[in-house]
Length: 324
Image: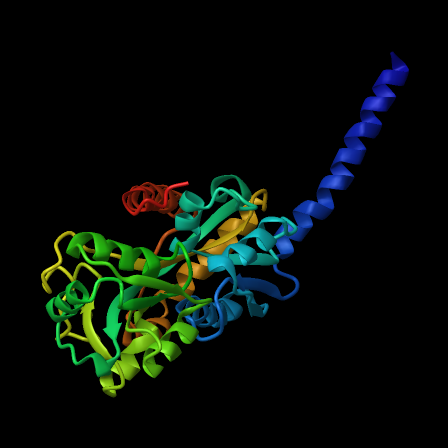
């Protein structure tokens, strides 16, 4: 009996000793730079969101937040890498609507959003704008639909990858307007916008940040925003519904996540930093001209948002015949 008591004491001491470093690491977090992985290329709406909020988080946390772009497979490659990373809060991922959509359409993903990620905080939402090359001579969505009907299957539209919001926005237009248009996927919005400017593709449902400047300069013709209301930066641009396409509303959103199992104190510290960052006046000032609006919410809010978006895009994917 005395031996068992001694063993119990030893176990208790070991547990206490082992627990101290972990608790200390959480209390001292972050003690080195934090990596924020983005699944789209530099200059994309995801990259812009990450760099703006990351710069502000650096000030709040006292350690540098380093943004790394790892594009490919509509950001699924980057997501899979982060899902396998250490659960210590030093590798984060900018989750987007594209990841939720891909989970609904791709049966071969190397991760599961609900099981492999710990939600941290909502970041922002980015408007989607329907833009066309000026050479088409179009002035409205009705003009575009009429052209598509007269040339079934001849018009092509760019997207930021298979299973992304721009892709499904094109599919939604085809379904709502009863037209045939061809999808051309790219790794991200910068490459897609470049080919749209060059006339290699006819149209694109683009993240606002990729086309607003070109639209104002007359290099692209902006026909409508897919948001539910008009954009403050483009007050004269109608919504898709106002332009005559019923029940049409899409946008891109981003949220910060960590590998599942990341200690809750670290998650909460990161959530606080994100919300302080997105509430900063300079962040809103940087985002507003690009059609980006900050969102607010912690781990539970992001979890609910992901669940809601999973249902919404699952229905959209099913309607487009893309459900896995």
